[in-house]
Length: 164
Image 1 (cartoon, rainbow, N blue to C red):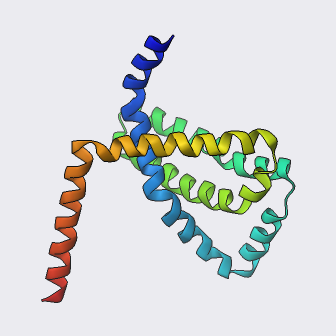
Image 2 (spheres, one colour; image 1 turned 135 degrees about the horizontal axis):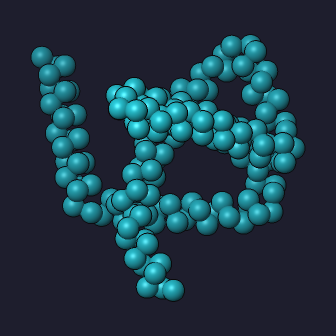
């Protein structure tokens, strides 16, 4: 069993790593961007209502957007199959970015209620620990360090360019 888990881990690690990196990169900024809508009175009212939900309803409100995006993602796959790769990619990326923004903001709003669910309170810290361990592995690899060096070089160049 351990051998199988090890093989599956190595096979799926790049996919899991890519998803976790996207979530890590996008979660906070997209949630903050979405939170700006709270300046609108109706949106602020909706957010207040979401924060007041009991745990089971909070779970439903948090989970529905993820399920609602499934048909959009299936449409993107259909478009890929029909040779509409560009349109499929745009749709898939839009769904991923928009979905992450909505889910991240909803999680911020529902997290206190969700943590009242015994199973969620049990699994959430374990998920966070596992995710941090995977991200630590990614950050130790040579490709990540090279990417960070390139990012820093571009930042330095842009700062110098703006200063001139």
